[in-house]
Length: 560
Image 1 (cartoon, rainbow, N blue to C red):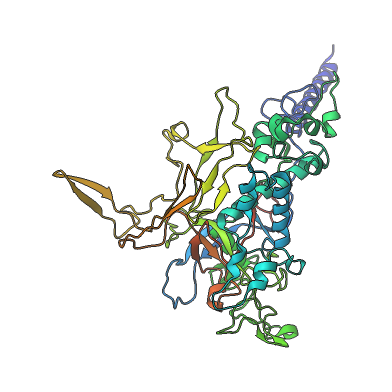
Image 2: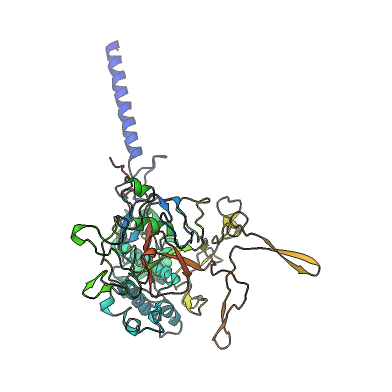
């Protein structure tokens, strides 16, 4: 072989090797090939299944996208009340979704109708489930005012269908969010063909319900193990080359199971209310934005509607809506949602109409010294309860646990079909540095680093001194128990004269101002608190959903 042929052969080998390497690189970078091992993902013969075509999270029903960022949380104007319970501090919020409007009466009565159909209140086993979800319509009563029309009609009359629901406690709002999570996930799985279409109408009962957590952890136990529902989807009818069913159950890896609905944190709510979609404005970024709309005043300055109020709030003594025929804000009590213009995020009534529950336990201090990223006080970490055989414990209709609240109302802790939850223990906390216990509502609260008034309380007992840590807050401790023999409630009020505060781990923050409040309270930075198991005629709520994946809603691409 002459040198020319040898040179040509070397060239051909080099070209072949190059093509092989390029082919390998393309294969490794393919969406269905694991870049670390070269093995196939989503192989039709089995193996690891993953949604490699996932682009980004769909906007959950009823919500608007809130792109996260940094902002000045707290009051940036004068504080004539001298509360000083939300002094300005810099916080960073991750992207999330929030309801465009408050949850309305029709939204909530739809929830009540579901509970009534699935857990019939005339069945003694389920009567307290429906009753525990009912809003307190008596919140409208006033000893020196006639409000019986609202007491009887506000929740259910079609004339108030799209008005914000009130009389709902913080606990009831959380339960609604949990229920909504399951209904949205159930619909998503029906549409994707994993479960029987319309099963929520034809196959649901107290013993056959859908729970998102149950579906993720023990999918065969969903709907009480009803195979007709679980095998009724189109995907269950698909088989591989050997005739075996494929994609029987959806997992988190499919990207089909929606992220949970919940109450927004206080920091998220305040960030969303300010509507800071244009951080290029210096005054907005530096915390000079006072209301959800532009400007420092409650009336519109635009020519087309100059002088109109921008929210529904109390104008002054005896003035809830203005003079008849020339109303200032178009409402005397609550107003229909979307009556006023949205803020820049597309959120309605983030000032006025009704105040809104947020997730946080109230403390007078927002301690950014300890956390300035997704700030939230209220974490109580739990885990799935496990049976002796290692399976998760599913709540049955005869195992429902009820909680008696401080006001005597009774609510179901877990509904049938859900996974029982228990506090985390040393198995999860041993040698951890980021958390050490299940209940973190009191984290660094009342210790030397967070209280000027920390002290040691000593008690003389048989010549010995026993010390107990002095806490920052000393609230009343009322007790409510159920008589085991007659089933009647035994209420004992705390009559101690030594109580110094109403703040405890069961009071929650509410924000936004309402139809009952003066303009001072519609500043998104304002914060107040109320017991989590009580309700009023001026506090409602809206839900939030966390964002997964990229911070932006354009696939993570940076803006030019």
